[in-house]
Length: 449
Image (cartoon, rainbow, N blue to C red):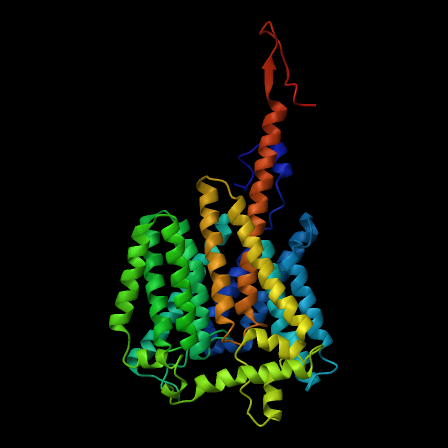
């Protein structure tokens, strides 16, 4: 059954054109490859370059769908326009880059792929059902990743710093990226949890949230802890406002349990956030001081920066080593200049504005309540990214653009529901008739012209 088969033909014509199922399932397969990296477990898959093939296939299927079925090539939204402007500014930084070849490789590699997936996600996740399927898959992949990390922690399989190595994928290859990825998945899974009514599904999602939370803790990531703390505070405030004291009690109980069963040394690691001397590795102080180097880099080249992805090389030139900036905002400013930084911050702001508009405009109703919960989850993920980006060089990669795509998707879904509701109202008004004085003949209502 098509999304509009249960409404009159007039309404179906008014409803927006949905994308075909094939591009969406191509996106789902790419998401699996991106997060799980099955080639790690099955090395014979490595030559197939599954990530590139799956993403390319999804994009080709989408373009063919638009070519043969018609419709606009893409939704046109302020966030998408700003993302394109950011890409143009990144390209403009290449001629004056410290290493033009390296900047060009990043421009045509990770940044280009992230932008394409952002646009694809914004267009093909255009129904509540598709959003729930995608977020459900993300909850599954996040649970598997977190379980893998917790297993390594329990087995004592640590990296050189005495911490787990993360998960072998493009997104979570070190413990900090591992925690950052899990926090973003926790946020959207919470939205799916509140959008779900079936008890069994809620239980499974609750287990997934517990496993991913434990995965963040076992990473010993200070940035992961701060982001997780922010997620918890936002959820507590939101549920208190809605009078959902059961959820508030569950969150507080979870926090208490996490404190009680936290691994040995975890508290000392978190304390080093405020006391750099408590960190024997010196990484806390190094990253704090690196932020000031980032400000100096912005002052040196405020217009076009040092080149896309070249803040690390700028550190090397100063004799600091290729540590680079661990702050997405300073990363953009140092690499691309102040104009690009303004665009990046504006892009984040417009994404928040978009999901806030959806939340404000949704009407009461079963479907709308589902979308409202999903929208809150996406907004929570944006919040997690905004905070986590203070500690991660994540401006050009899927962490940001995947979350941004989800934000545009909820706006696309809400717009479709709004158009459908308007079409239903128009159809009802056009076919409604009122009796004349004799009650034997019918004529259109006066409001219809």
